[in-house]
Image (cartoon, rainbow, N blue to C red; front, top):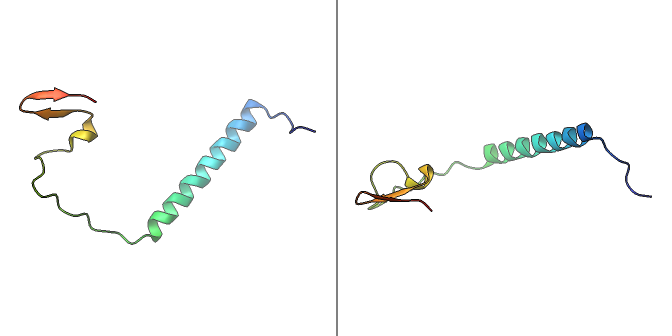
Length: 65
């Protein structure tokens, strides 16, 4: 009465197909959304966003979290 046993290859194929479908759906939603202009940051830090690079630096002291 249970579901049929699937081979590892069948499971990987189904997982890959589901991921590809999800990616295509997300891309389609992004295309349909109106593009919003990002607001300029007022009084923010100079240089690249520290969270993007995984650390923060303040007065020469870097901290990771």
